[in-house]
Amino acid sequence: MEAILACTAAGGIGLANKLPWKIDEDLKHFKRMTVGTKDQRNAVVMGRKTWESIGRPLPGRINIVLSTQLEGVPAEQAFIVKDLAELDQLLLSLQKCHWFGTTFLIGGASLYKMFFAQDKVSKVHLSLIDKPYVFDTSIDLSMIYNDRFRVQTIQRFSEFTYFEYSRVSLER
Image (cartoon, helix red, strand yellow):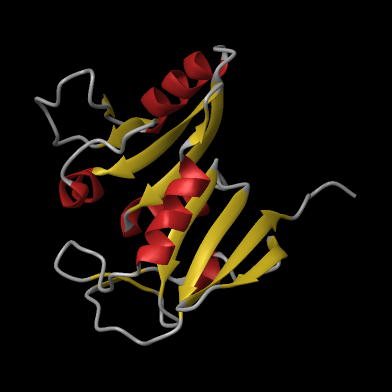
């Protein structure tokens, strides 16, 4: 699974259940990364609060919400899974489809923490926002800034820098 996120240098990712910034270039970059192609559909995995903050399914992607509290979402909008075992089962089923592409973890903070702690992230797509913003939700950047991930790509945009990190192989 690949994690994709935007944050400040202090790890800020949210304010009042929304993004603290409005950077169109970053939103376009997120869409470009997660949509897939005409022959391939990608999945986005998110928690309940992220689902509610977006307010609708992300078009062109398979929307999966990991939540024990969310109910009543129409099946054509999103898959609702209650735990990691159910998520793993769903992803195994999807991976059997020739049109299935990449799975992206898109938040929020508690899901990032859980997936990184359980070594379920193989790649990280990080948009590091240039300016400091006020935030009430953050992630611990040491989940990424450690010897388990290595920078593969750096790309400069007008208001952020994109970093692609890949998981370092544990085999020697």
